[in-house]
Length: 333
Image (cartoon, rainbow, N blue to C red):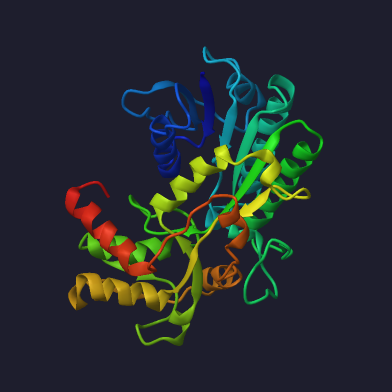
């Protein structure tokens, strides 16, 4: 049985990891990958893939994703988007990419694909804001306090509506902040959460925009986190969850994660790499960054996603920092 999967945003870090994971997934045999992004993606070694450089804000180019030699995909992973700080600083571009292009992809799916196609949309905990309960549950109302969260929530509502009407089999996965991201810093408000681990472990200085020193009380700011390895496992699991297992009124699932403060991160860095590495973290408080990150919820109830088969990291920050240290030493981070 051929499994055809379209990934938009496939040139990004997560898109590349996902393509490789699907290529190696025993539950997705004979997978054909349609990989699309604003720059040409790379195919996993040995995979069957079509690589497409496409402007996903152009409806004609979106339609063309369904007419490759692999035909209409069975599953779509909608990963593309403008990150949080980029959306905040350029509202028009954020709307164009995070809302308008997602709607174009949904419309192309509706017009050119069979109704049973799985449409997996990656959302974010940035959809939350305002007064929140100590622990977010599936019934907690999303009220974003930033342009990125607004765009994600708008597209979530469309995915739910297209699913309700039977046009797609939508699956909305709200991602925790992923730590540690390799590569160069991204234009995301949460980028420092990886940066204060990644750069010091590479012998480079990192800027922490929360607090003005290691003693600052602002370092108690908590975040909801997950490792890259666990996140990619959950991306693949999202494809295999039976449709009838989701809640009837929504396809939103907040992926499992754990809570850690900025201080927890720095203490893990100190324990794993020592005080000289920790000294590479510099502090300069950024009120805009702190306001946006502070509006995101720090804890979720993992019961529902775990019941669907999703998985969670164990052990907090320290094993994640140790794993990234090994990746740096191996030259793969």
